[in-house]
Amino acid sequence: MRKAARQKDEAWALDVFDRAPYITVSMTRPDGSPYGLPLSLVRSDSRTFYFHCAGEGEKIDCIKANPLVSLSAVSRCAPRYEAEKNNFTMYYNSAVALGRASIVDDDAEKIEALRLICQRFLPAYMDNFDEAVARSLSRTTIIKITLTEPPVGKSKGNTH
Picture 1 (cartoon, helix red, strand yellow):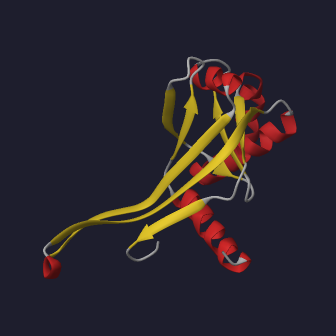
Picture 2 (cartoon, rainbow, N blue to C red; picture 1 turned 60 degrees about the horizontal axis):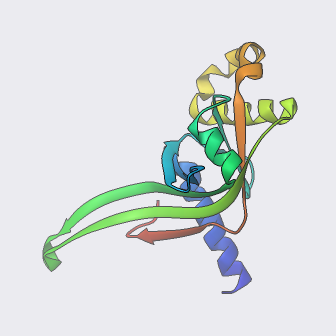
């Protein structure tokens, strides 16, 4: 694939992740069984996503056992009946990516990740951000997912 086309595809897939209300993160449990769940992720650049969670639990156990994760998102899903073709179909925009998850230890990076999360999901309340972070930073775990290869996207129907 030409570099320009690949970059456009990567940018398009990242936009799908940005528009999706949540991103499904699939992990592997310590016993080898799959574990996937929808999470509220935010992207800081073309390779880095963050989410927050408690300091212990199944997500943390999975990441410690095997840091490799898969991300998947759907930013548009529209079932259609096309009468002229007598056809049932689904129009969609979707993206997938592979990455490596790690626990963020640096307080400055944790604060920046939390700021990005709050700006994405609750921008009208940013005036309360500093006070909330001061109160909860020590008990909040931030997970960083660094993509290990470019994301890819698929679409059927009109984009976005």
